[in-house]
Image 1: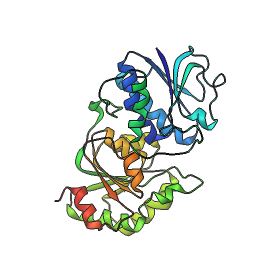
Image 2: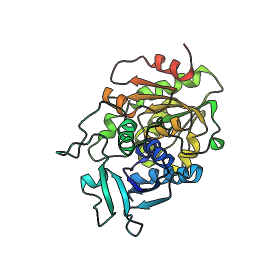
Image 3: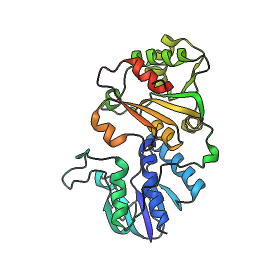
Image 4: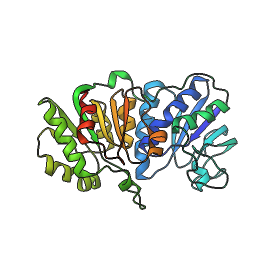
Length: 297
């Protein structure tokens, strides 16, 4: 069966799409992926390109339109329901599954937060007959990982949406600066990396760095591919609920996510066994979070 998986956009969403794609491929289906061409979709391209190379779960990756490929038996889509992609113009399929994580015919918005994004996506695969366990999120071969226990990654970056939702998800530069200093002070061998675009640098990384003033808090410039290669060498991720958090979890790193809404913990927590959620909307002592990061009971 030819399947078009057109649910993917952004780095974190792409990583959380990996289990469903792996499940479809394990059933013998040919899977193509359709992504967008905005700056947010760059992360999806990197994730799926590496997944295609590492395990062959994906046949082809299309940007904006899959017209010209064979007609699909099934298209598992969410984007068409906000009007961005249209059947017969951007893709063609005998059956279309409304694959929004919380489908509701009356809205294109988020209407349910009862379970994880991956669990909602797997519902569509179960609908096609899959009966196995939920696959993992890894999209690179384990040989590419080189996790080091005293190397940490601080994640503060976001796509900067016009509505300012990223500000709501940010724990705050002052608290992060205090936390970074505690992690570095715990052991002189501890090293913290961070990365991001120019907006991240100006809005978060530079203000934190000015307070921390340590050569062991290192900003690594570059593009998204640079950041992916950096994260896979860090043994622990801590920071905001970001796409890099999901990348770190997919590489087997310990992940400590600081969430600003309890619903986001349910929907977005890292899909791994070694994760912790800090309820950032509560007055959690910074020392308590630092102890979790460095593994102090």
